[in-house]
Amino acid sequence: MFERILVCLDGSELAEQILPYATEQALQFSSKLTLLQVVPMPSSVYMASATGELPQTSGMIAKDIQKQDAEAKAYLEGVAQSLRGKGIDVECVVLGPLQPGKAIAKYAQDNAINLICIATHGRSGVGRVVFGSVADYVLRASGLPILVIKPEKAAT
Image 1 (spheres, rainbow, N blue to C red):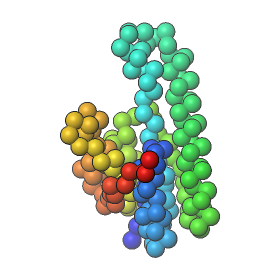
Image 2 (cartoon, one colour):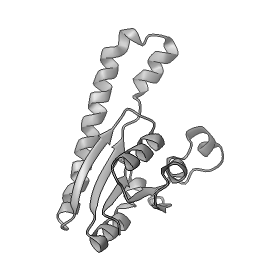
Image 3 (cartoon, rainbow, N blue to C red):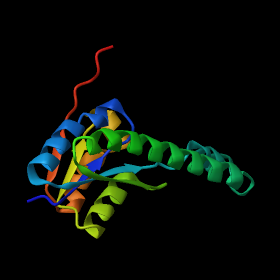
Image 4 (tube, one colour):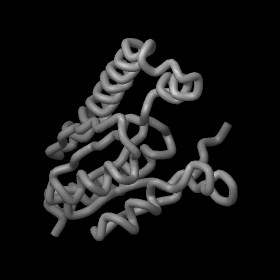
């Protein structure tokens, strides 16, 4: 039923709570999992654009992007190792710097994804207005089946 499953991660423990659900689906349907992380625009871009110093800081921006990309790849490969140990076919994809919701929906449509698995961060009110909801955007824009969970906050 679901040959290709896209699992959206952002490096947070909240996002990782989707993994048991995605794993179960992959095992049930012998699916290939694609772990996807969208790297956001580095903060140096926002700082540079606010001060108007973008041309002078292009080297710093490129280094920030390379660093974020390398960290995301290492993170996803770490997650993938445990899934591969369970016999699941896993690939890791890092996109960016892009707007996460749009990047996820486009990737899913361009890559024959059958199911998207994503955790919402549960923002409401002003937080949702300011930061938006990636899960909500993907749900509305992708046109695909989506497994969405609202993760429980970690005990502190």
